[in-house]
Length: 309
Image 1 (cartoon, helix red, strand yellow):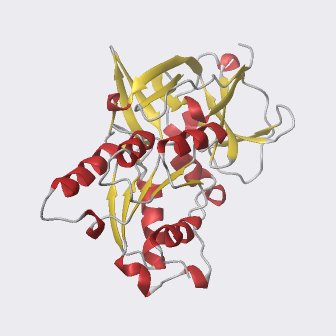
Image 2 (tube, helix red, strand yellow):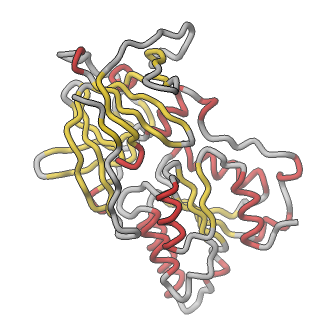
């Protein structure tokens, strides 16, 4: 296999579709959002790093950048490859970083609807919590979409979500009156977001695992004649990649609704490339923040809700 660059993303904005790349490890079928894939290449020799995480094979330099190689087979507790000389590195880009994930084969690319991406069981593959963000059922096969952000957070915590805040950014009583809605499927990241917001004084938070649940809640409050939407939601924070309904679709629905479009909406995602940023702007997102800079959320929410000093 020759090195392959990331396929061009041609999906229309806000239609709740995504492209996933299928790959295998010990015969098990997995998937990754194509938007996270930078390149596919044959396995290459790596330099072992002493005292590194047990799931880190080492590093290699394909061109002008040194990349960390993570052995997904070892991480997931699966078996060795039957033909290790034919294994593949998937070069990924998210959270402003690049990593090489060692897999056994790459199968191909499928376009799916968000409704095909189902919520997984909380614990799979050797008891690791939150290792998958969704399960896709296609014809006679099941594809597990892995939570690559959570994997990196466990293996390389220093490269994961950053949420340290200065004393001046911490608790403010004026923030306690604001209600923040969060749509995030990763259990690890949603906990970090909520912890950071609560520490800063934004204690009124409601969290949903995907855009569909968030939209159902917004619709219910909007349609209740006894309720006023601003008493329940003053700002929305959404990931992009989620099961059932993605963040772009949620953004489009909110910003196309006359009763909801005034609510500030922040896209907080590891997938914000230049192309994704343009899509978010077209859909009406007020602000887009690239993970892992969670500490910026407080400042942004302050500005959007009028709490900035």
